[in-house]
Length: 501
Image 1 (tube, rainbow, N blue to C red):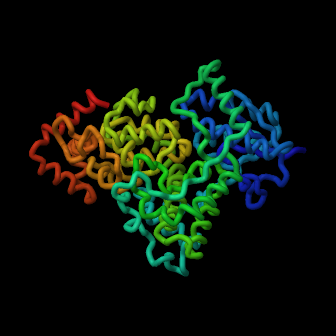
Image 2: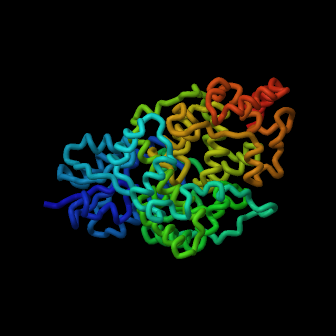
Image 3: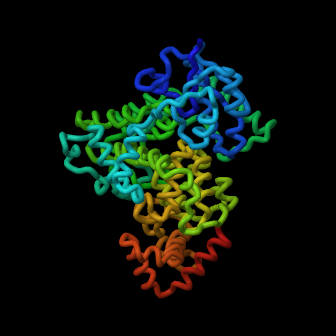
């Protein structure tokens, strides 16, 4: 009797076929299903659709006769076409919808999740011990590093500190258009990519499937070999300079020293353990400073792991959180990634980056795109869906906590201690995006009032009682009370929203 194992499209690395510790049977046959319904349900970024399909088809080509690759309308149809009623194993999927499907199929046996550092039951025990309500990433991060012995010197954090954020908040070099870092790894397209692009063209032309954004040359790894090359390139040439400017933005240098490994991790091409240990080894070999290494380890073993665990721990009801009562629909220019319709240079620049590549680093996501949505009162479920669809590394488990909790503060503080939003002065301080803009970051009123500055004070005004009761945001309310022209500020904010996107 043939043993079958099902690989979802984000379970593409060798660790998803390893037979030890709750894995599939040794030498099991593999089924991979390309379900067209996924692309009918959501209007994905074209570059994201290309990357996912390219990665799936490349993996099938690598597995050769071992795999049965099925193109079907739905996963259910594809699984039946591939194996009929034969028993199948599958590792725990990364979304609740996929888990629900797997659990509804009588012939499918669920195996533990892979591709993450902490078992879900271990996290649940830790979270329950900490009260389960307000869970802080810093506490989880330290617990994870202790538990795994990651970047540790005995019982102490390597380098003497758990958190090196203060060394990782430098402004971009004055007058520099780029950081000057060595370029990231970029893959070369092949015949499989050409086939994917032709199929996407045909789907749009004949099947009515629609995408958003541009599908230029593929920028992110679609194979294990490419992902390992990208990891080596980052650790050997870019990690050392990553930390100091990880929170900075440059219009002409959106990549800076960032790793660009999130899509490879989230496709399952890389295991997070090999990424963080490669960074740690670079520090121990004196090839990268501890602040840069700790900053990268925090992103993977801290934030990525934390988001994955909270997605499952908080439950499905978390999706409906809307503590600030935001219900405004996303405007058409934002949905269409129409950067040319936007006057504010920071927003236009970042939106163009998403349109052209399906990627920006974490600060443009949080402090430009997310902050703007929060200030405008956009519906957090729509904002979450937009991030899910428009980013090459976006999945339900990634974006639900990141956007609902951190970016839009819709959970009332279960995940973060304050809303993350700011006026134009912050963007001006950490970037060059205000240069040449039609608006001035310091102007709160008048024709050149910055939409982020007016939006910030409008947000504080709408939520003053909530913010006044929070120790981390009470000073914003005090600042609001010192404004001598609040009516003009609110008027400028309404005018911007109504007249100039």
